[in-house]
Length: 455
Image 1 (cartoon, rainbow, N blue to C red):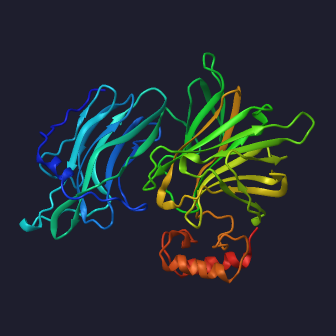
Image 2: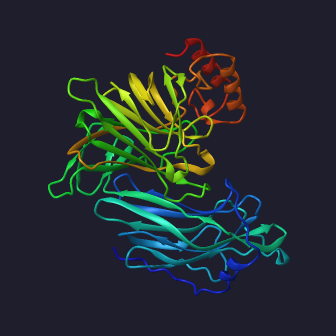
Image 3: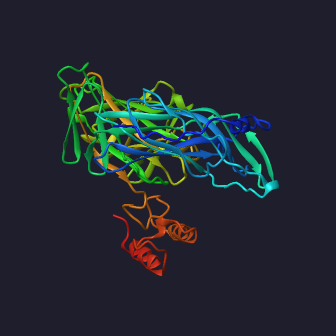
């Protein structure tokens, strides 16, 4: 597609703001960072709109300036320009490269109280907009590469501070995706994929390197505590000693991470004639969690809390055929990976055996470090076929038992207090009648749910 050329300004003194003032170190949950927001223009379209936002610490007043490149691969930019709060002299929308990058973007705004010019204090601040087209199929990744960022200290002074650390943004989009209910997938190199109902059937291609793999996501899904991205792995497809690795790529915020991931490897190890046994090993070391606390549950009740040591694994004896994996921000705003089954299994770790139907794995990362989930990649280097299914993105407000507000598996006075707190805070989770408003009818709906009890 022919590129739409932009009128680009000549670089000038705005870049000086990047070096003005003393350096400051961002707090762990309050930092300087870029955020790429990418949206597909239509469900079957491979044209995407891009918005670039600048985040700055809350003790500052407004975004001042930034210089960066947006890196990508194998895309064609249709349009690109600065937008939002950007209005300063010398700003430039950047220039596209032959490989799909936009280089040398300079954005910023004037804040000069002495002349009566007050900057926009939006945080995050929209600073750049674009649109690109991608052809073919597979995944495309966009990321930022910073040359600097600064923010104004207060509304009463034009002094700005440079950011000593800037967290980059990394986002992935799917080109030519396979649409399965409300989630999408892209087979990885060497894999053929086909949608059958709510499942994705993978098999090795005729000229591939062997093995199968796919990336899956729920594009544009909202994110809040207790929401989850859910998928199933069919154990019937796995021959003994055939590993399947799942890797989760979050949207990181201020935790100091950019592209770090969490992964789990699942291997069917049982012999013929024996109950199926599945070994699970975790790798959370990229995010600083070599030892992982586990919580085992049965029918919603806590059974045990073992800790998985570095390099260790646990086993599931006779689990259900389709193991469900969920990526969750729980009610305590902690990132948790959940493995669950529709029927109980025996859980074996370090010689101890328990009965459970759910395993929760917590790397110890709170929601202040995570905005959501970019994608999950599922790979099996030795399998010739694999079936993936699931519900995709599941809203946390869609509880199996809405009256169990504190999610502890039982109904008591604390659920009333929990609901009252949600209602008082204006939380959408208290909208039990689904009319988009919080009214007395939501209290009546809660009372009816409480009286009916949990399944």
